[in-house]
Length: 146
Ligand SMILES: Cc1cc2nc3c(=O)[nH]c(=O)nc-3n(C[C@H](O)[C@H](O)[C@H](O)COP(=O)(O)O)c2cc1C
Image (cartoon, rainbow, N blue to C red):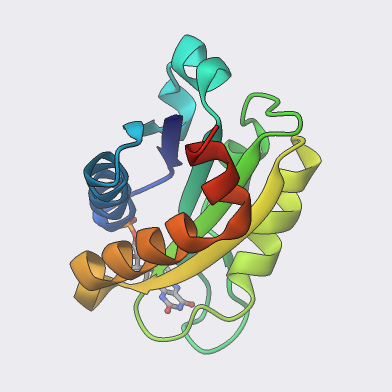
């Protein structure tokens, strides 16, 4: 099973979380690669059974939260029908960013099977918990056992 983790990051948290998620996926036997969303390895992406898309939370900290730089996510290559998971990194309150990110990813054809809001103060724990949950999800288990 192959996976691509694509992230949009300004100060590095979402990138670091993406790299941690890819490492956790590899530890679970998935051939995973992480890269910036506007530098996707298109061949790897096309061969991927699972796509993970992450961004940061942009807002006024307790309201008005939206995915950071949504236009970059909206330019994601078409991923028609691929199993997809979304994540965001945040400081205090992610609001409804995961739902908003899911809607953008679905417009690119992704079939969203899970998501996680990862607090920037615990990227390691958040990434590990997210991948554990993802690998336990029925949709992903079916891919692994194929
Ligand atoms: C302009 C700006 C607005 C932000 N707004 C929020 C917010 O509304 N809620 C929140 O929890 N974190 C907010 N944050 C914190 C970031 O989402 C958090 O630091 C994130 O991990 C940054 O990801 P990055 O390092 O990949 O760029 C904001 C950060 C910036 C720079």
